[in-house]
Length: 391
Image 1 (cartoon, helix red, strand yellow):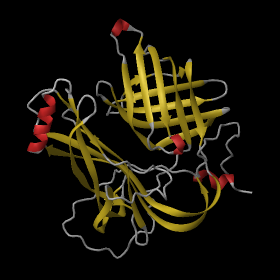
Image 2 (cartoon, one colour):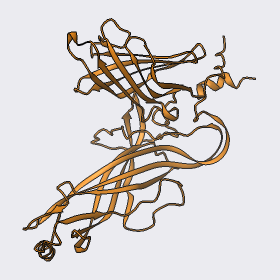
Image 3 (cartoon, helix red, strand yellow):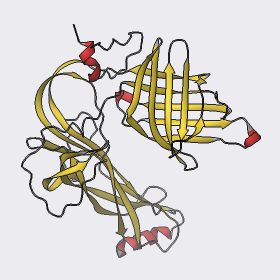
């Protein structure tokens, strides 16, 4: 059986490729980030209303403003040593974890654990005049309870952190005239970071990983019975597969298609840090043939299919291929196929947009890059190692 050849060293290597490491670490069994929000109505007391209306009767103090403040969360890094020890905000597990079987992206089911987490914070609300002088104030709190599906086997520990708290007043913050409103709406947003860890000793080839989206939903269970078997690993959930190469940049050129005549601009950032999480693509078409009516549009990708991603050698460079789906600025949902070649001689790209029946409704043809630049960088993945590390 033949061996996969080495990728040519003339191809640029992405910054987040694998390299030898010897480490003692907290192994991450799962890692989820999310943004949670809660809305509540805050009512002023009679005394506070009198203080507000008294200030509003003075033209030199108008307008008044409602200002809300939340506690400052510790920084994202370092991961240890920056834990919050106060009681002005906190995250805690409510009840015991439950074993569940959940559908996973790509098909199939995986065993996991369902955990309920409560996020709570104090909120300070002030009413100030135009000079910033305090008129009145009140203290309140906000909480949100959320369920998370995690890889949380026995012997691991759950670490729940609030990384940022934001408060907003959607109904408006300016008070102009009497009578003062008796209440106002308050929205509090929690940015949360949840990790399941256990201390292990590993000799590994390592690279930085990215969090997955909070995209698993637990089914409604009538009878919950404990399971005898629990998973030691969750390879179907985390970590997600690596990309074989990455694509970034912005470039434009003229279409090379009998059906379309115009200028297209492609802006992409796919597989940044060799992970498909957080990827983006936008295609802008400017129609220069007005004989059949202007067809200017912008297409934005909303999802990328990991299974379609290919990275092929092409001359002295690489060819990047991927498929996915998205929508135009007019709300039309379409699938897309993208191919980009980055070589020393030239750069080009081609984009097909297809409707749900699989029919091509737009084709750029082969677009030679006239302005800008597209970069395809090689990612050293685990799949490459069985060939690259042979003596």
